[in-house]
Amino acid sequence: MERAVRAAEQALIEFEIAVETFRVEVENFSRLHHQKLGPMYTRLDELDALIAEARAARTGDEEDLRLAREARSLVMPMPGVEELFHDWMDSGGISDDAAAMLTDRPVRPPQRVRPTEEVRRLYRELVRRAHPDLAQDDAERERRDAFIARVNAAYGRGEEQQLRELAAEWEAGPAAAPAQGYGESEELYARLEWLAQRKELLSVVARELEDSAIGAMLRMAPEDPDGLLDEIAEQLLAQVSEKEALLAELAGRP
Image (cartoon, rainbow, N blue to C red; front, side, top):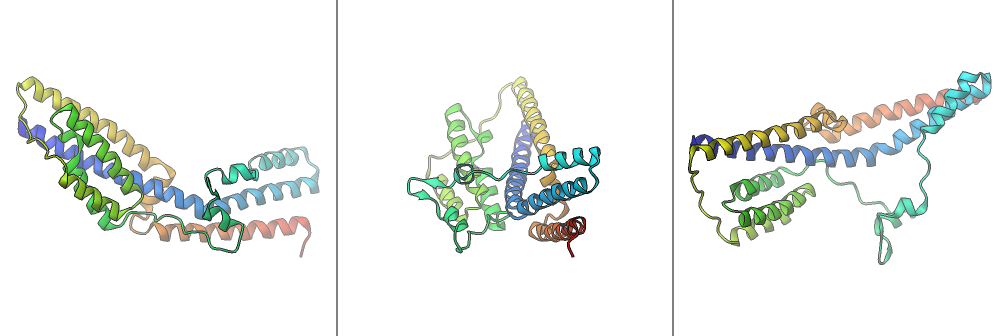
């Protein structure tokens, strides 16, 4: 029974690694998706509103007027200066990225869609060694919780050097207590039950990630998410061209 508990603990750790890895991929892909495609979606919404308004102006039909108002209500309003730059202000004023938007200087490219393979390897090794479920007492669990939070943050940013430094820090830290056996069979059953509950909670998180719009996109092209973004961008640009042509036709422009 104790062997089964140890196996279940390791399986749970591996499952947590997989879920956290996918969560980071979804988060990074979502950020890049918004940065790269957001302006195109905004342009499509604006064109839909302009087309509906042009059609309503032509017909004067009450239903067309209602559709025009509805389409216009969906267009995102232009943000004010404070809203636009509130995340980019610091004690020295507007940050470099914000200033670049107001000049001809290029803005830094968005964050990578996925951590590199080396970053993934370092992350997995660290989690397997420092996972809180391997703690033998509350103090050790607290130490591991704080450490893994830093590991997750570095992994989310794709910081290979930071992960290497964390690995060295863990190696130089206090040695973990050797794994202790469980006592009575009741403890073993209780531990197995807790592990099963934890696995179910993680399964819910995993399903939510997989069922999200961004998660579905990643599953479509797990090895080339950048290429998928380029493909979607081409499709959106084609839609923009079609709508611009329709708008010109409704406005009577050549």
